[in-house]
Every structure is written in C-alpha cells, then in structure tokens.
Length: 487
Image 1: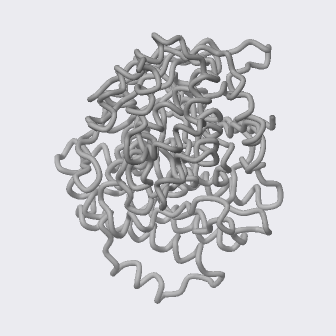
Image 2 (image 1 turned 180 degrees about the horizontal axis):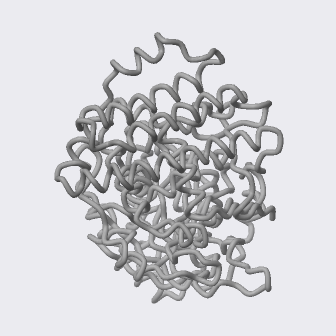
C-alpha cells in the first residue's frame, strides 16, 4: 500500500510536464488578489458589482488556464460583460438579507479567495515535484486535512486548475459548466464555503479526510473463493423508505467509474447529490484515476454541509445543515477523521440486460462489491492498531439499477454475499420504495432458515437451473424461493 499524508504537495491534473506555466500562475494570483482587494471595500459597491467581481475572477482564471498567452484588454472586457448563473445564485440565495450579505462578503468570499490563492501557490511549488496520484492498480491512501480539501475546492471553484482529464484517466475537474448552466451545484458549493469559513482554521488543519483506493484479487481468484466459502451470510435489515446516509454504516455511493460522476456537469442522482451535500468528496476528483473492475474508493471524514429536497430533475438546495449537530453525530476517530464513511463503487452498465445473469456478469459485480466492502487500509494506524469503527455494517441499496439497467433482486443477493465475505456484521438495504425488491425480507428469511452459506448461495446463482429459467423473466427471488421450498 502506498501512502501520501497531509502536508504533501498539492496535486495537478496530469503528469506529463508542467500543467501551468509560471507566467500563468502569476497571472491567476494577480486576478485573485485584485478581486480580493476590490471586495475588501464591499460596502462601497452595489450587490451587482460585488457578484460581478466574483464572476470576472472566475472567467479570467479560466481564460488564463486555457491559453498560454497573456491576458489582453479584450479578455478583461469580455469578462466584465459575460453573465453567469453563479451571479444570480450569489444575489438571490446568499445575500437575501443584510446579515447574510455581510457574512458572505466579509467571511465567505475572503476565505474562498484565500484558499484559491493558496491553491495557486502550491501548484506553482509542485510543478517539478508533484504528489503521487491515486493511480489505478493496488491499494493507495491519500490523507488530506479539511483545510487542504477547502484549498482544492476553492481552486476548482475559481478555475485555477486546468480543465484537463489526464488523457481520459481521471475526471475532468472543471466548475465552469455549473457556473454557466446549473445554479443548484453552485448553491451547494457556496453553502459549503459559507459553513467552513466560520470554523477555526486550526481545526480545519488538524482534522483529516482519507481517500483510499481499495483493490482485491483478480476475478478468477476471488470467485473461486466464493464458490468454496463456508462463511455464514450476515444479518440483513430491509428499509423500504429510508436513505443510506441515515445509517452509521459504511455508506454506499453508486458511483461512475470516474468518481463524482456528473456532479460538475449537471448530474443530479444518487452520487451527484451526495457529492453536492458533502462537497469535500469533490476533492477526490483531481486525485483519483478512474476505477478498474476490481477497485473501489473509500472516503472517510467528509461531513454534510447542506440539506436537499427532491431527486433528479426535482433536486433543490434546502439550506445549510446544523454543523454542530453534524459534528456531534460524527465525532473524530483515532485518526482525526469524522466518523462518516462513504465507498464509491461503479456497477456494470447493462445495455443487454441478460448479461448480468451470466457467470461473467455476476463475477464482475461480486468482485467490485467485495472491493467496496473490504477493510480500509487507511484504518490501520502507525501503531498497527485498527480504528475501532472500521468493521461497521454496510448501508446500500439498488446499486446500478437505474439507467444502468441492473436487476435489484440480483444485486441485493450479490451485495449480501460480498458483505459476508468482507466480514461485515450486517447489511442495511434501502429500497427507495422500489416494489421490485419488496419480497426481500421473505427471501432473506428463507435463505437464513435454510442455513445457507455464501458458497451455497453462490452455487445456486451459478447453477444451470438458474440460467435455464431465464431469471430476467421469472424473477431472481422467485427462482431462489422455488429452490428452497420443498416440492
């Protein structure tokens, strides 16, 4: 396992040569410093002028990071005339009253600009000696302070990072799409900065967030272990209406193979919502390569800063959380991380739904889920002791069962086996009112009453009989029950 700890150099998006020149870095710092100086006299400016200064800084930084040429008068003129939805969000949602206006311009924006300036400074310092990234293959841990996460987010917000996707290996870390087109993510990110700006800097620098790439054995090795496993299946709790974040468990993030999915591109389903309400998760995007089939990414310590309503097209920002209550709910562990654990693992897209019922399709999902639910290497302290909260249960649900076309009946059984092999004490299954899995309690009870092991359930799903009945038509649960019920 490779480890990079807090205090190491900040990452830049690619490895091939300097991403930004010294001249570009200097120009970015000049833009941010100018904005900071102008907004220091915020009371002398109209609300429209203040928000325009923020938008101008964003646009000028974007011009700098996408062009090797120096800023021109034409660039500056363009930045003064372009309007972004970001401006409306600032005016309507964070400056609606005199008290909110003062808080925003005296604390939130100065804090965010300071973080963005530090981001520019650290990118400049690490042009020739960069952070070892969380690359694919093998377990790796990167530990950042909450302050460093704020620096990464502020750099993204002000477009300090070059909009580069590392040749397709890493998510594109680019806020411009949401600044231009989607006010909802802007609201969540600005809420985060307004909350974190109130916290003591010493606290932000002492508290940690760990980002861990977890990897397991190749498919053939791991599935052979499942076939011969005598491990008992763990306990299951079925929750038809609750949400994953309600549980003090390892919480599933139904991820894209590029962590964060479409959070910066207007996405608004499970993964994107979690990243918006817990924006420190977004700091993983410039760190992490895309996940391979036997890998997952676990993040420990990213708390919730905002509330939300709705889902998908109805998603709405619903104000800040009670941060004191959030911290009380998630105290610090022995590694100085808040005790909230999220694991990102991507399902296999099913353009042809039958593929998932075949041996290869099931093997891929078993391996992926086992990587997700395995013990986090970041939980082993320098003393060799393991953090007490490491072996929590898992809160999950209909993984890959929306646009990816997965069968939730099959996915719940595969995840149950993976939880058991990973020695998790229990699995909470949040069904989100999905009628397709309402039989689950009866099926789980029947399997447990039969005393089935992981290996026996595995062999049942891999049997010729399972393939013969065409489970995509008859139903996975119906097949299992037919095999457990005496003729």
